[in-house]
Image 1 (tube, helix red, strand yellow):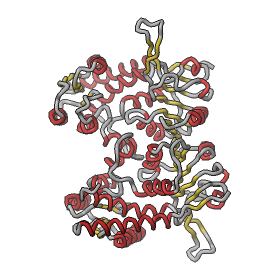
Image 2 (cartoon, one colour):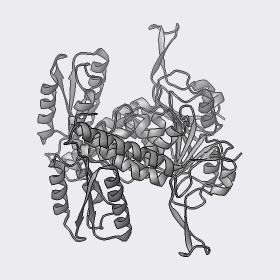
Image 3 (cartoon, chains in turn purple, red):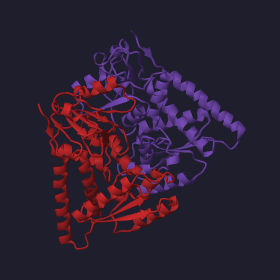
Image 4 (cartoon, each protein chain N blue to C red):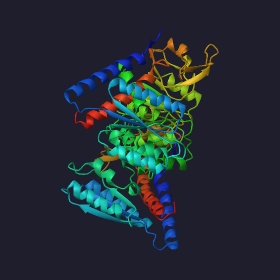
Length: 297
Length: 297
């Protein structure tokens, strides 16, 4: 068996077109309809700048008015909170995104929680997370990576109900909420983490119908660990030495792609799997927020 | 092998004595120290009245000033919220407990969330749950049943780290938060629920070092499902027909006690296992709140 490769690039691009068309259509019905995203970046981390540029470019491509508020690295917590407060009250703004990580003198939790729930398109605030974790509650926004993964699984007609699911990693932005979303979709979920032994990992993986890995360790999931026919979603972004590359390294996921390819039924590549879905879900959440604010949701 | 029976009644009574002594001691140091609990009961459900009576009696026994605010069944949501608001602002009150269920015209979620986090000794508010679910956050209060179970496991020296744990049930007040607490303690947790098949249940249980059942189904966990030596915590409270009883029924848990007793290493009985722990944890949370308010925590 050779697994079908889930083409996150193509699927995200299809979704991006849908978003573009929907915004165009909503603007044609109501000329005041204008989804607006504000990104707040504190300092000048080069990786952050790259992400921000990417999000702004994508926003503009689909018709979202995206802009960047760049703040000095030594901004005080109070000034930053005041800035967020102003944006919370600005009715023209539908999404506020705080580019993480923040400089260490700022309380990331407090600042993330300061974003009004209705504009928290990252879905990182406590109230939003609580809604994901509560059995019958509906969150205003699903964080972008878990949302992108659920979209991929649905797009590929992967059944979750009655299935054994393993989520590797328990972060607040990926593994934690994703485990709960998969459970709400009817999966029986085991979350493995840094205190899970390798024997335990093997036991759960060898029985899993779906494995999602988000631990940030190259070759964490290998072919011998998995059950024939399982579905593998790789969230990792790792770099390993590679002499054949000019940079001397190559990007890879958590999954040993080659050994899993011949056993799995479906697998996401890195790059080109979950990554592009995460970016497009930022746009989807902004559109969702703008629609909600216009009474269309 | 015959399992050791975990005596929740004795353990809770020991903890209750500790609480009594601690309150006595704190009062002797500071005559103004007086933990105070307010229970709000809407309507006259007989089962609710029984629980309320039990909590008030226990409170008074350990030196907590407990009192009941009994409100009419047809109280408006706004009046109830106003009442909670007043108690939130009353500095002499350390714990506010809304006796559930509420009459159907009241929004249980909204009312539970109205209790100030610092006084939410049930730990049911969204902000409190979010803190339980977030990886590095510390909740102000752990809901009483999960807290009682963690206490029992610790008291019995049950190792959780590196262990396979199955939690049956995913309610917001037991299974959900408990799964996360066990995971935070290092366990690898699988949460099984109504959409888990019987084959799945069998697979996970036969491999589990610790099983907690909170589904409310008599005989849900039977001896053939479990691994020799596992630890079983039974949260169920069910009633089954029993002609030998005057009432024609007998109380039992989720676990088929007899068939599990000969295979497990430790097991909680029903009654006399988790139940008494839940009650005493209400008292423990009120004391914790009073200490925090007095700057002692």
